[in-house]
Image 1: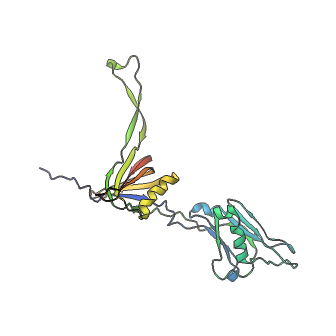
Image 2 (image 1 turned 180 degrees about the vertical axis):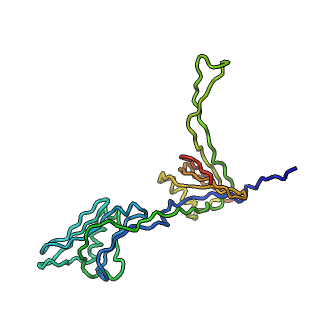
Image 3 (image 1 turned 90 degrees about the horizontal axis):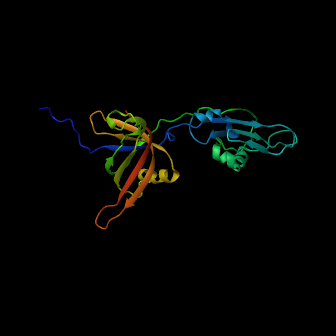
Amino acid sequence: MAATEGTSGFGTLLQRGDGGVGAGTKASKIIGTSNAQLKVLAKTAGVYGNALTFGIVVSGNSTAYSQVITQTSVLINAATDSGGLSTTTVLQAIANLYASATFDEFFDANISTGTGASVIVAGTSAVLSGGLAGTEVFTTLAEITNISGPGVKLELIDATHMASPNAFREFIPSLLDGTEISFDLNYLPGNANQGGLRSDQLARLVRNYRIVWTDTAASTDSFAGYVTDFTPSAKIDDKLMASATIKITGPITRL
């Protein structure tokens, strides 16, 4: 008789992805040197930031400060004196930039190095660079006590017709459905990753998840999903618990 190859469910892990945001790099561009450095960055990490532009114009005599900001570009027109020299400091420019709601939503700015006390200098408008997408980091959800799923359901279309053989109904395949994954936890109200499930639910945010099984190959099922239910509970004679459900969207990939 062959020995069983079955393994215990103890040690199965459900992990929640961070979307790669934390590990990525924001695209940026610096204009100026020393205390005149002004650095503009994409608001979030990723290669998309490499298409954004930033420039500074110093032109004309006795001109007022102005700025033109869109979702994809930042152009500063420095204030000048009667001789055409810039009078806007780096710190003043940063304050003016953040006064724009559009800038605050799509960009960041800082002095990079130095004090920012010197006036800004001209710099040709050009794309930001260095933006990189991060490798997604998965964190194990704390103290799960049981997991059910992920399942796959095949939907069928009734194709029965008047001459179906032997008067039996006939079906043809339609779409695959990743159904749901449900699980229970020892509820930890202060745990950030457990709390993230509720945050994702309220934000209606799709997130990547994966289950690491307990076989010797550590087989892993990866999928994306929405948190559709997160319900804590407390009993007088038991621990704090919570139940949660994730509705899978798209395919389940075995790694």
